[in-house]
Structure formats: C-alpha cells, structure tokens
Length: 120
Image 1 (cartoon, rainbow, N blue to C red):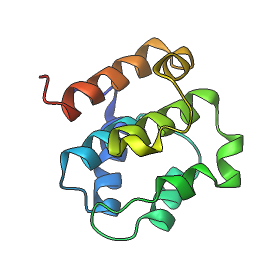
Image 2: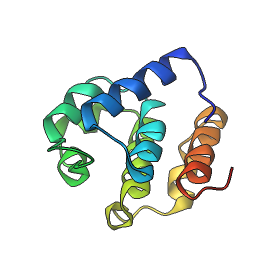
Image 3: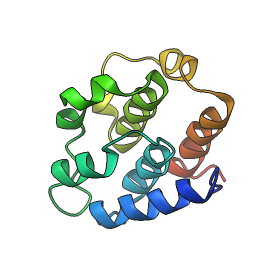
Image 4: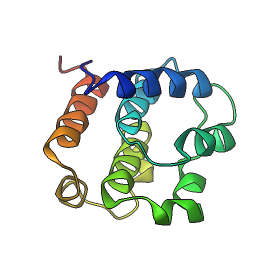
C-alpha cells in the first residue's frame, strides 16, 4: 500500500494495534480511516473496538463527536466502514463519498479498494 505521508502510515499502524487487525477487511478499512486526521479518531476506535477485528462502526457513526468532523473525514469513515463490512454503508453512494474527497484522499479510497479486493 502507498501512504500519502508519514502521519498516514503511523496512524495506520496505531489503528491496527487498537483493532488487532489481521484480516483484509480490517486492514483495508484502517488504511482508509488512517488518512483522516479527524480529532479523537484513535479514542473513538479504542472505545468501539471489542476484540480482534471486532469494530462497532455503527456506534462510531452515531457518536456526537463525528458531527464536528469535516465532510471529507466523515466520507472516509463511511467508506472505511463499508470496506470493513458492506452492511455499514449508511445510505451513502460511491458518488456521495467521492464528492467529498480531495484528490489525495480519493487516491487513498481507490487504494483501499485495490487492497481489499486484491487488485494490486
């Protein structure tokens, strides 16, 4: 995977530690989510991770704190939740997601898809 910068890579490694992520669904979701520099991201994941690869994205998406995030950060969270499990798409289309992403984060989302589905 190609990271957009050192902070993206460092955050990805932190998220994998929190989630004990070892499957492709978790790794691809954490790769996309790590591109967000939203305040409180690590704390939210710690709060809503309930064991190895067990992330309660629905609870994260319902947190009040998410309302203060930028539209781009919310889009990355929604997209990461969908890569983790398609049942978490929350009435967002691919068009909705990509319309909020700048070029750099759109590349991250596409890289997440490639990684998730083994199109490397």
